[in-house]
Amino acid sequence: MFTINENYLKLPGSYLFSTIAKKVAAYQEAHPDRNVIRLGIGDVTQPLCPAVIEALHRAVDEMGDAATFRGYGPENGYEFLREKMREHDFAARGCDIADDEIFISDGAKSDSGNIQEIFGPNAKVAVCDPVYPVYLDTNVMAGRTGKYNENTGYFDGVIYLPCTQENGFAPVPPEDQVPDLIYICSPNNPTGTALSRQRLQQWVDYANAHGSVIIYDAAYEAYITEPDVPHSIYECSGARTCAIEIRSFSKNAGFTGTRLGATIVPHDLVCRVKTDDGEREIELHSLWLRRHGTKFNGAPYIVQRAGEAVYSPEGQAQTRQQVAYYMRNASYIREHLQAAGYEVFGGVDAPYIWLRTTGGRNSWECFDHFLEDANVVTTPGSGFGPHGEGFIRITAFGTYENTKEAVDRLAELYRRE
Ligand code: PLP
Image (cartoon, rainbow, N blue to C red; front, side, top):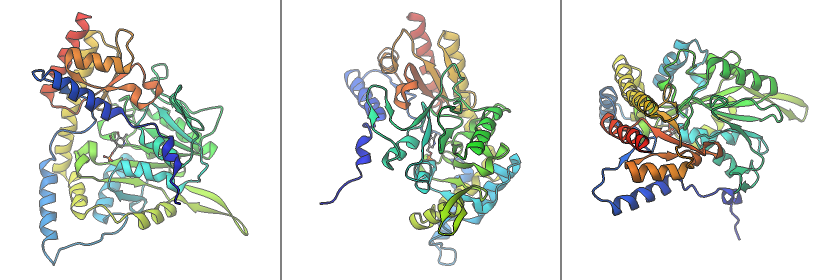
């Protein structure tokens, strides 16, 4: 009889977005006349920009001609894209990253979920609380955690890094235990806050001093507005020996349905392993290269051409305009909800606003209150980790008109309370 990976059974059901969908559907069925506005899910709404669409069309035509058709591509991605990423995302920010340290992929979700495979089965993992759930869940699946505790909402054997109002939603390096793998997402989903250069440098210094690896998710870097916030962890000195960075085209260029991302593994990131005749250093780069070559056959050619177009002068101008569009929403949400009396965080370097619940409600009670009394769909903060309890996430990815209407309704709701 076969057996299963019982680590999967440790995972509590992923009820967050399905529960939200069910609640919204039930509400709409009971109140078909109400105009419900959705500021819940973190998906973009603006179409792909013209420079990207033109590149896609050109690449599709190439695929239809025997002279220019492409089959399997280089497993790490086409050089035309890696070169552009190196130049714009790293060299332009003073980061020393080589083309061959960039591995093109089909997105940050797969990479941030798969990267744990190259580490030891007993690696001690640290995650922020609250945070994007993929980092923790994939380590649970891999057997690096104990059981889930229903009462605390925590897995045994995991180091949680609370992101609270007291620490400015910036995780602090733990002193009592040393993690092997540290997942950091900045700007963070769901809190919408980002680590300052000094805070991130602190993490890099900690990782180098303790022999930890930082897995840095930069999916929202395009939304950073403050000069003191790094766009890449490689802006910090010493990051090449302790950090892997994961990037996405989903939020900066609207590729959530098109799929493109990248993972950066510097050659300087090494692990000492025991051998028959002593010890030797193994580059994590060689492991990720092996994993990529064995389990991945490359992102589609046409999508990589679309990604290349993001870096053209037109692509840069057009995608920046989209980011600015969402950030105008973020400012509207932040400013108007604050003026109405809500306590709001985030929304300056990220398309998410993190709002404290009102009237002593917990996250789900506040979600229901906003849905029923303002017809606005949000996301309960508790769905992202125990320290998300008492908060609500609002996304800036809607249309400006809907965002404005939703915010005006929430402001009115607060005044009536
Ligand atoms: N990382 C974070 C922090 C996210 O919030 C998301 C999506 O919401 C992703 C990664 C997924 O990115 P991708 O679409 O490139 O898989």
